[in-house]
Amino acid sequence: MGFHPHPASLIRGEGKEEEMYIWIVLVTFIVALTGFNLAFRADIAEVTTEPMAEAVIFKIWSQQTAASRFIFDHTPPTNGLTEIAYVEGVLDFDDLEQYLPYGYTETAANEYTSYIYCMDKESADLSVGVPCNDPQAVRYLATYGCVPLKWRNFNTGRPKAALLKAIYKKVKKDSDIGFANELAADEAANAIGSSWSIYGLGRRGSPIPEYIVSAGGEGSFKATCVDDREACPYCMIYITPFYK
Image (cartoon, one colour):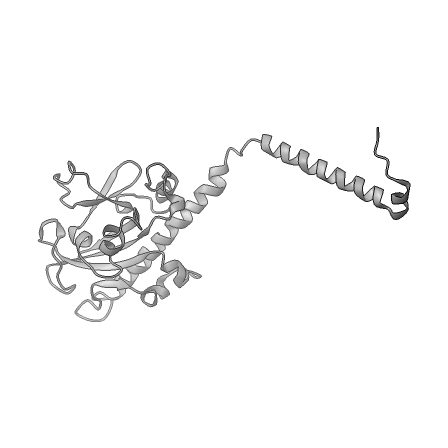
């Protein structure tokens, strides 16, 4: 039997409206069922996850690059002086703005911290700090920030492989950039010396100098990534040494 509206409703035009509503509901339901049966795109990671991961890496790479240029411009002979024109500590957005890509906002810069460390190059495990102009000084630039929950593995808590794979595409190396993690007890006694290191896709990269791990005030790697691991279980970090 078909749909037979009441004669009074035909006068008011209600029958056609009710019939149209029923068809809309049925079509919507059929489309929804069809959607459940569609296969995922084979390249879904390539068109969604990978570009987003690369954007995360692009931020830390851009900030490290900008901070490196700041150091170069404030180091003799480029700065026109006989001494280094910077001190240990956090580089603010004002310090980096002219070196950052167009459109890189202060909000984006706040996701990572760029910090200059100056330490005695003769000290064991680079564990002793000295003034940046000290003849014995080796200067390290470290840019770091918490890995967002979105990019942490649900089971292990560690950064997802997609995020670490993005390093290869943007930076082309993974020894000086990756996630920071404390060495296991059986690793701490090896030749690396430091108690923390940088990790990539299943491998260990550069050691993090002990001074970076144990020193520094507000905003330092120690304060952000070592002392409060409940709030920040894992940090992405990019380190670059400067010997001149």
